[in-house]
Image (cartoon, rainbow, N blue to C red):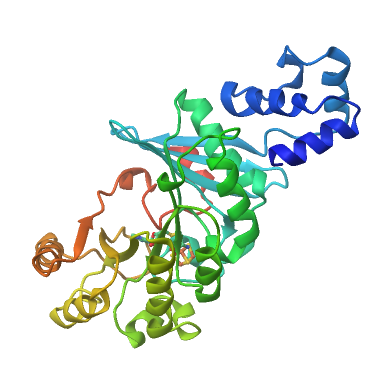
Length: 339
Ligand code: SAH
Ligand code: SF4
């Protein structure tokens, strides 16, 4: 619920409007889920809330693995027994959560573990928000950044993802700055146009991974529906409309998209607009047949882009040893418990 929805709810129970804010403070600022512990609420009202069957915990931690650098992968159970994974990535000044927006994913990218799993269902708003909230509670820290780069295609679950983003951003919610929130998409073009009209300063990342249509269609089947010219047009539109630099994610896969020709095509795509290339070492997923590019190749891409005045960075992959890195998330509790 938004604060306004909660206000309507509490007033429908005969309570003053400000009770909504009190409940939100407990939930988001104190990390308290149990109505009986919300000490400034009248006892009768606490009981009433519990009786109404109001759920505060939409995800429950069922397992977790932590890497040496503090990256931690969570295995969350949803109320209907489905599962999703989320990742906590601590840096000196940033505390980032990578959250999921769907159980599985229908896009079926050839290189991605989630894509191999197929699509189960969209996540609900509470299930998205609660991944971030719960990790903040468990790590006893304020989450400063959140990225929709876990399982699922966020723009294929547009309504829930956007409402969740607003709750993550709201002062009465988790209070994460809009500029610290990122949606990554495989390229659902109509949804990018729609996102450009939202009154939000969030970041958009487009999973490019190939700079020519035949190769991109092989890697990301959705490219057949929204090929590169229309996708890049949408990216340019988003950048122009929001004045936000759009990130182009480019996984480096050995012998697939990391040749001289690929580099030239990538340079051409980035020409003349507000974008930024994020080069990502490929994280191996068994059964795909893909392998990461040599580090010298990665460096060559980086240096050439930089010399051509394209904003470029290399993503520092974290948590690969616990299979918490990009594209490695899927339902695999058995393995998580074993180790
Ligand atoms: N569905 C969205 C967001 C989730 S995936 C999307 O595809 O953009 C987040 C990022 O991880 C995407 O850029 C995706 O292409 C990338 N990714 C998927 N599998 C990967 C892998 N095995 N190694 C590195 N990055 C991967
Ligand atoms: Fe889905 Fe993104 Fe994985 Fe593609 S990369 S299958 S869109 S989660």
